[in-house]
Each structure stands twice: as structure tokens, then as C-alpha cells.
Length: 100
Image 1: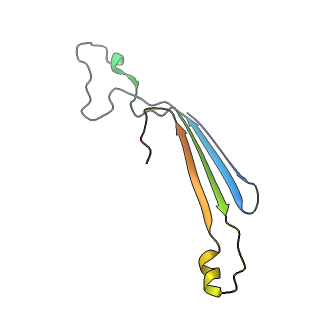
Image 2: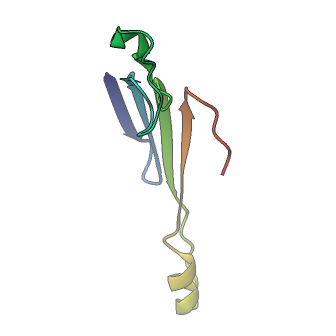
Image 3: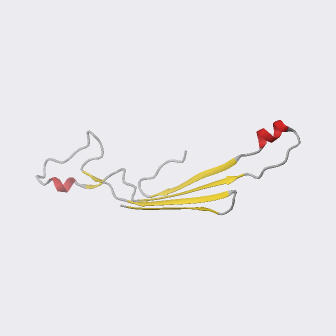
């Protein structure tokens, strides 16, 4: 297993981070009631890459502090200042997943 992460603040308002993981999941069966062949006496023949294995995972995250505005009306200043936009982007190997 290998993990690496990095984070960088580019200015007072923009921050970017990334994390990478390489790993491998091996098992005999993926679930509680998964089938293991009994015809072959050698159990190692059933051992292999797990169905839930995600060998490579890359995650990128960002955070942007929105610019402040000097509103003359105090309730607007309280409601519309100090907002942030953030997000996470993930790329991973393995079985395909739906977008949601």
C-alpha cells in the first residue's frame, strides 16, 4: 500500500489539495455467502482480487473564499459575506459506479 497527500494554499482565498492511494484487496469470496469451489482441494485457487478492490484512487479538493463586499446595509453584509465554494473530484480504478 502507498499513500501520498499534498496541500497548497495559493493565496488567502484559494486552497488546493490532492491525495493518491495505491493498494490491493485480495480475498477468497466477496460476501458472507459467496461460493468457494469444493471440487478442488487447493484453497489457494479461490484466492484472488476482491470485487471491491480499488487499486488506484486519486482525490482532488479545492476551497475558494468568495470575495467580500462592503455592503452599506448590515443585514446584507451578514448574509452575503464570508461564503466559500468547495468541491471534491475523485478518480478511481475498479468496477464502474453510477454518477450521483
